Length: 463
Image (cartoon, rainbow, N blue to C red; front, side, top):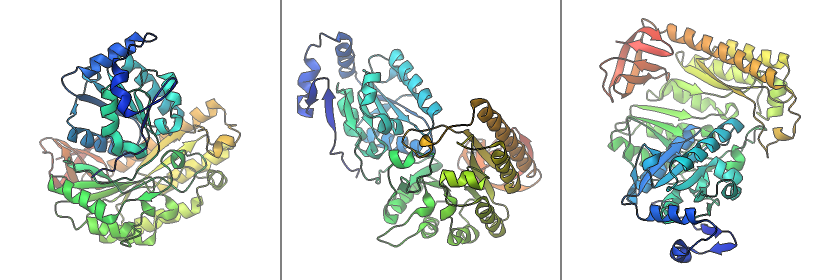
């Protein structure tokens, strides 16, 4: 079962108290802050251990929240969609960009005002990034928990809902298997962390270096999900292409092949890939594995070789385009999506024009465009952030406009054609290319070919 945390202590102003002393501390009068005692007592006498979880950021955070939910459910916690009804509120945070972090902080402060009697846990990358400093900013915060500590969430939650304050769980753990009942499509984490150290990215500092789950552990989780009704699994990692099982010898293509043999699994996807690690073996697996979705998200970030070098991406724009060419030769109907950054330090108008040129030449099915956000601790933070804010916004707008143009063109090309769709919900599903498909009357779990009759927004309308 889930590994237990061995590095949790309870901190209070004036020293450290042990978990054994917690009960005494809960009933001791606190003249300086009586409202905190009242809030603790209210939490302690609630009939149900109700939890509200809010997730910010990437798919990895979504997967982490699902694991936390399963662990807490095993401990008797119940879940609510209304934070005002919760005895415990968990925010699973993102720190990849300044905007995401500030938005989360704003929501956390608002939640504390709306439910002053609840206990609060801040989990995720922001907790790892700021650690104990967060207790000064949010005195009512019960605990901070790093991404690597999600398997300790049960112990942490029990302490916080029991009145514990100032709990730090920032050390680290091993990602493991937690039994859970799956939906039609479910995430399965295969690796965490990253060793690439792109100059703008905080992930290696917050999620740490690359760690890989064993193939046996991953496949066991996928088999359990399939037995509960899951039809699509999405393998997740900061860099799935680098996956390897050092004991069993499996690389990522081998893992995909073994997963495709699981009874009940109809489709397999994966996120996220790094271009430098996309091997010929993986391209061949796309061609030979009928269960592998015809979609690949492959972040490019820039079309300028000088910018790519400063980003420490370890490939050129030409290298990237050759990869796309090989993919389309192998799987002609594959959908390709990417990320780009607008306004990286030193980026000129000419540099960004090259990025737009690459996007158009690549003919992406979708592009996610982000404005550069300096993050303390990264190499790019030391660079001169010399692109003015109006220029960043202008480039962002241009990138988004081109992304919309290409996305609509690609979708309209499917009118009159058949696509293979899996419906995760009634009426709504996704094609193999990860296009959103709407078919009135379709039932959750249906899988098969549908005919596309039109496009509404970015949805394919089927019959």
